[in-house]
Structures are given as structure tokens and as C-alpha cells.
Image (cartoon, rainbow over all chains, first blue to last red; front, side):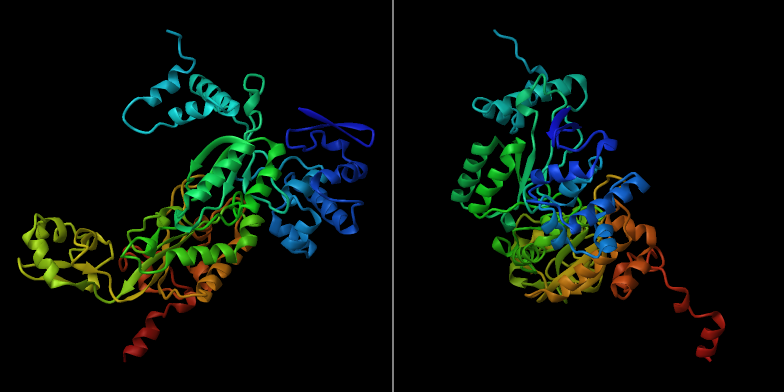
Length: 106
Length: 402
């Protein structure tokens, strides 16, 4: 288990950098962590829209939503999603939203 | 003599066959990662348990796939393989490389990774095995600069692959190489940015020999075929008859549909009963050739067992002419993927979805007619069910008969 320090606070993360203690998530965490996912500067309203959607879905169902569902519910396409989160929705967006690491096929 | 540290793996070096253990030991002489990999594998064999954690999520900028995360669960014992990520590199269609390109690929890999490769994985990609997280982006940048790109991984369109087709083979009924390349370029987005319920594979075989086993290994199989009769060169038949080949025993008797007749002089083929198994053409390549009008049969739903059992692809279009820019083919692929993406559950392959919702639902959704070629034999295998409104009631039929 690794630890990272962001904005003066210490967090437990797994080897891919996903937050381990989900209740420690905060908006400050997401903002301070953003640069590691190739997002420069302040998170925009569009970033928050995706992050909040992911968090709500995760709280409701306990898993990350399928990508098609994200695009459909938020009315954005894949290109836009990758513009917002250059490392991708599974890696970048879920990490900032403080979700457990999505399980996917390899 | 010093006792070997890998007695179990050593057994795999025996025999006259190539051995991955031999290769790995050779690589271990200069690569610490390969060395620890051998040690970890020996431990896995000893304890009968894998020592990789379940897949991690790593990647390169702008791509959601192409890299598969791997971490050792015993980094205390094998620090060099603590990270051991795999990179999939899109292979050139038909696997035609120049030695220069291969050298370049290996040089890049020696610089950034373990030096171990798997040429090629079952998707067709060149697989680069074992790299650390901090090397991902620099390695990808070097690959890009040299003209390589990553293949598909995860719940995405996987790298399409094709047999060598017209590059080397006279039976090619379609240009499998061009189709594969065209589809690869057309679907870059779907390959690099995973958005599907699960993986989706497209494979192209240029004739029914199906050398890339597309029928068993791909969700969307394109297999070259012909319309009309098998072309017979009687002069060459005479030559075969005069040779060691026993035409009756080895050709006609082994024909699965028994559609051939041989009277010792003339070969007759009842083409209507031929199921294009290629047996006779393979045995007498000089005398028999596929028919003149060429195209492809499109099949869907093949997969290996993971969540459900294995499935072979089923015919959905008996014959499609395939010529650039392949608009009809691409439209069909798009319609199928849209339907699957819309209705598929997480980790449900296309074949499983068709099985769950029914072939008739699938056909209606993608706008294809039910045709006799979809059924193995009339009444014995009716997996294409009629819609209730299509079925005439007995009194209606009676009226028509009158």
C-alpha cells in the first residue's frame, strides 16, 4: 500500500493510485490530484459534472457505471470525455472521483 | 554440480520443441526483470498459485487501452517484477514486417522494458511483456515516433486481424489484408477508447479454410467465399489420377456432404450440396479452384469460454461483395455494435446477447432478413424463430389453398 500527500493531507492509495479509504474523499483531494492525470489548472464545471455523476452512481450501485451510460446520461461523447480526462474515464475520472479501482477485462 | 534454482521450469526445456523457459533464461542473462520473472514463475509452479495480482489500471495519454497492468504480489521476493505491465502493439496486417521494423521494435523494447516479447498474441498484436509504470509514456512516445501504434485491450474493439490472404495464397476470395487495414484505420476511436460492454473482435479470413480461425475466435467473422461452381481443370485431374492420389478414397469419400462423383475418368461436383469445406480444393490445388464470383460470408457471435461456454459464429449474411470502401460492411458493423452496446450487460459478448434475446430480435434490430442459409438443416435446427405476426393461421392457409 502506498501513501500520497496532497494539499497537506496524507491518503492511502493502491499501486495504481486509487483511493483506498473512500470516505476520505473531498473536492480538495480531486483538485490536488488532478495534475497526475494530465489535467492542468483548475477543474472546470464540466469536470465536476462527470465526477459528481460518478460519485452518485457509485454510492447508489456500488460499481462504476458503464461508459456508454456516462456519455448518454451526461450528453457528452467519448472525444469530449477524453478531452476532459486525457488518461481516460476508467483511470482518470474514477480516480479523481475517489471510486474503487474499476474491474475490467484485460 | 550446483543445484538448479528452477527444477520445475527446467523440465519444460526437455524435448525437441522450442521452449519459452530457454528463451527466458537467455533473456535473464542481461535483463533483471526476466530473471525475477523466472524465479516468480518457479514459485508459482511450486505453490500451484499465480503470483500476479488482478489487472491494474495503467495507460498512456489519450488512450484508454493498449496497456494491461500487472503487479507481482511478492515484490518483497521479486522486486524487478513489482510492475510488469504488458503493452500491445498493433501488428502490420498479415504480419508482414521488414527486419528493420522488427529490430526497431526490439530496440525500443530493450530500452524501456524487460526485452521479452510474445510474437504474437492471439489477438494478433505484438505483445511486449513487462514494463514499469514510469516507462509507459516514454515507450509509447518512442513507438509512435517509429510509426507503431498500440492495439486494443479491455472492453474495446480489439485489433482486427486477417490471414495473409492474397499476399501469399491463391485461394483468397477477398482482399483480407486491405479489409483488415481499412477497418483498423476506420475504427481507431473504438479501439483506443473502450466504450463497449466487453471486448469485440473482428477477424478476416480470405477463404473458407479460415486460417485465422475467425469463426471460433471473433465476434464478427468475415470469411471469403464464392458463388457458383468450383472450377475444374480436367487435364490436371488426369494428372492427379495418374499420381499417388486416390481420388475416390482421399477426395470423394472424405467430402463431408458427399457431393462429388468420380468414375475413374471424370470428376463431377454437385455444387448445390457443397458446403465449401475446401477439402477437395486443398488436396487438388492444381485441378480445382473456387468459383468466379467472389465475396464473403459474414458471421457473428464467436467467442471462447469465459463467463459462458464457447460459441462458434453464426451466418448472418450468406454472401456480401467486398470492395473498397466497404461501406455496406462498415454500416453493418456499426448497426450491430450499436445494438449490442445498447442492450448488452456488462461483460456480455455479442454471441451471448444474441443467445439471451434471440436471433430474431437481433436480425430485426440490425435490419437483416432471415434466410435459409442461417439454418443448418430445415426443421432440425430452427434457431431463427418467426415472429407471431409472420405466422399464418391454418384457416388463412386453407383460404389461400382454395
